[in-house]
Each structure stands twice: as structure tokens, then as C-alpha cells.
Image 1 (cartoon, helix red, strand yellow):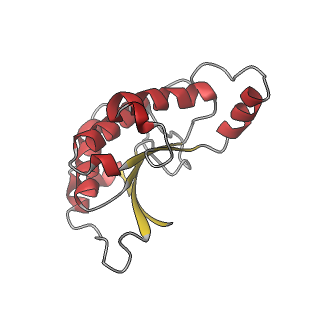
Image 2: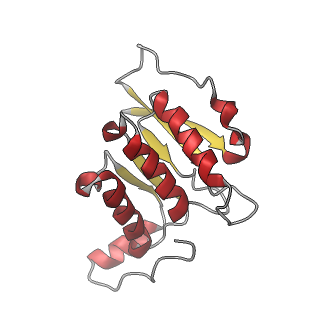
Length: 166
């Protein structure tokens, strides 16, 4: 399946009127192309989460109401990527939405170890249910994670504890 993603910086979502009339799926591509909403939750001049929670909830609701099938934390190309706090808000929005069972979550940026990934697996299971750890519901945009996964699968020691901020 091909994907179309809309990338939105949280700074434009205060208030969240910037997405009041987002692009909507058309009959031509519904079912053939997935629609994702990437919220640049880590694209901030500070690493603090205070003040972003409501903007994240608002953006998620707008995206979910308009047919996105995946919510993503970041492009992974920012100074600060995924955070536990942003993930909790996004997963909570998915769980609370009437279409939530058909929507997935992707954590991107800063996830470098199996321990980092385990944080998000736990959060997804906690918010979306025990069956949430599957590709249709949970993904990682974390190219650096592969090295640690390969090390663990080869019988080596996993990387360090979750990175700072997780």
C-alpha cells in the first residue's frame, strides 16, 4: 500500500485551526493509499512537553476525524524525536476515537535500543490493548534501532537502558 503523510509542526497548532480544513481522502484513493499525520512533537526549541499536550490532542482529533490511519510522532529528522509524553497523548487519542481500532501509531526519532522500543510497545499495549504490538498498529521509524535488534538476536547484550527522555 502506498502512503501519503501530512507533516505538521506543533507551533502552527496553537490554536489548532491550521488543520480546520485538512485534505480529505477521495474515493479514488480510499483503501488504496494510507493517510498518515506526522506531528512534529519533537520539533521544539526546548525539550519540555508542557503546553504541547492540548495541541497534540487537538491535532490528533482533527486527523482522526478526517480519515488518517496512522499518527506519527516525528519525521525522525529533528533534534528531538519521539517522547513518552507525546506518545501517551497520541495513543490516548487513538484509543478514544470511534475509528481507533483501525488506526496505528508510529514512534520516530531517538529510538536507538531495544529498551527504547520496549517503552513504546508497553505504552501501545497499555492504551490500545495487548494485541497492539503488530505492524498494523505499531511501527518504529528508527534506523539506528536495527543495530541493537541484530545484536540481541545474535545473542549479544542489548543496548543501554532507555535513552534520556524516554
